[in-house]
Length: 255
Ligand code: IPE
Ligand code: IPE
Ligand code: MG
Image 1: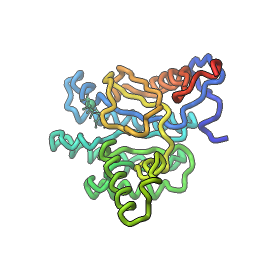
Image 2: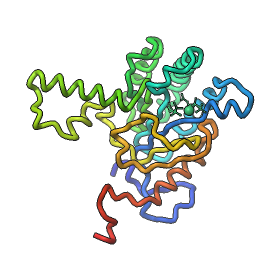
Image 3: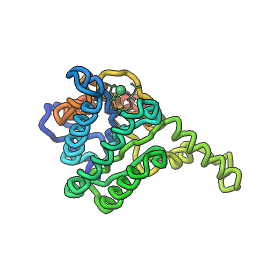
Image 4: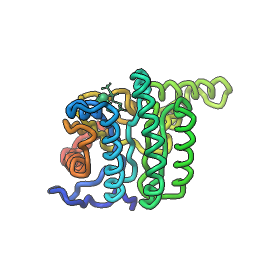
């Protein structure tokens, strides 16, 4: 039985015995700037504190036996932020990778990245590749970092790949189906998210995993990302465990 399908067990009050852990949790980590503003600090301090939440949530997901954790760390649109903030975020990414890989390895975490990775500074790309390589053989939690990621850009890239294959004759138009698209997304090897969390209260998806979240359960919390730690994660999972997923069908007791 895959770890993700193990019966739900953690120290939150889960009343439904059949409640299951989500196999894949995806998080829009939002609110670092507001967290810093509230304290009269520069935005960068919010991003630094946010990196500590990343550590805590990765560890907690590993301990819970969650299969995949995708973190929206930098969007295609985030390039439009002031140069100094973009550069600080890139440095923070490199610093995080440098500092955490040994710890991730100890926790049996595998690393993957989605997005237009070639758009990142070369030193960040190198650090990322090094981390992915060092953790390749692990088989615990897969941590997926969404970097220079945009859901629309991802679909554009998939459409280009399909068009190329149609042009060379490798793919017949009549054979294009949902699978042909899924298999050309950056997430081709990753199951769709079961639970989508957004911190800091905004009710929008901000171009995150547009195709993949079709049937994800959504949990929005007012907690700002730097304040989102294990108890808030457990609350999100508790919320998820009470949802009835129907995938367009009818509830089992009505079938
Ligand atoms: C999320 O926090 C981090 C990134 C988008 C990189 P924000 O920086 O968006 O924080 P707010 O939304 O301004 O509070
Ligand atoms: C979404 O947050 C992107 C990331 C968390 C990386 P934003 O702060 O960029 O989203 P908007 O601008 O509020 O929609
Ligand atoms: Mg934001």
